[in-house]
Image 1 (cartoon, rainbow, N blue to C red):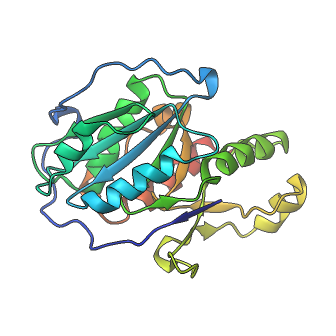
Image 2 (image 1 turned 60 degrees about the vertical axis):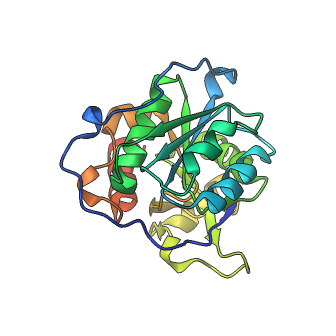
Image 3 (image 1 turned 90 degrees about the horizontal axis):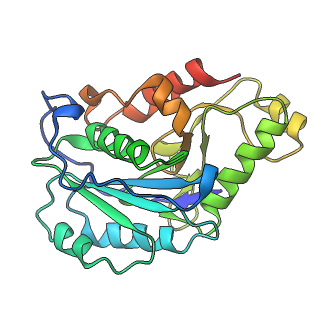
Length: 239
């Protein structure tokens, strides 16, 4: 599966000093999901990229397997993002969580993942606001998870191949391949690559794994939080 990402200028700001469970959240109402045991919540973290966010949300709306809920964590954007989210133009329920200042991607994803678990999600699909998922991205992630599990191994997470809009590989989002990836591909007879870590650009994580390993470390602010988290998930949950 593919998620195209233009990858704009990284968020800026100082590293936060407060833990995510102290961060004020504007809307923490519980949402009843309709997808049963396979319900998926998409989590998007944004900061001052309203136009990119609109493209990102439109791509989520266009999925062949649509998530049941979209959670947007807004790191105190000043470009009209809050007003845009309040318009609620999509058909998938969107719950926005506006933070009091820019706490960075790491805390943003922690807040979003915590909200997804509170909403009853069974899987959480993470991405930055500049990611544009191809229509079949989530469908492939879910299907690959099922196939890998049938092959005798429960994946800690599944992730998409990330490319630029022109189709070239986004090198900053290349997952770290497992040394024995070809054995896994042969075992399940599917063109997948077994990886040890991934970026938060279209990665699907089971809710039970998030409960087991906790949330991303907010001290990373905007770099390496995704690599550390997926490695931690792999060590704790891969069979």
